[in-house]
Image 1 (tube, one colour):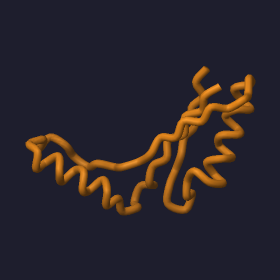
Image 2: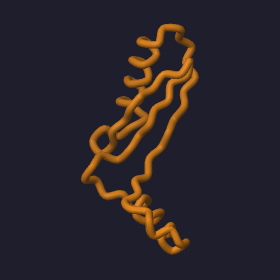
Image 3: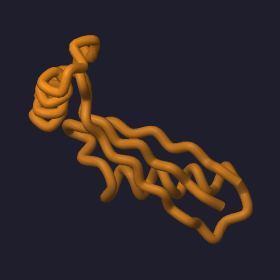
Image 4: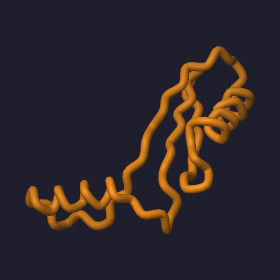
Length: 80
């Protein structure tokens, strides 16, 4: 079973990478781009057949290692 963990900076936390990407896009001729936030996606292949258990395990991994929960939020999706 595959777990997809999306990690993003929490609202209110400065995002210098997002700012740099937004600035670069404007310089490349994309003035319609507003605020940009940078994040990461982590795909985990889990040896679990129960979707609820897989989600619980992935959330535990995110809390303990994959996300800095002080400044980042995360969401977990399970794909078959």
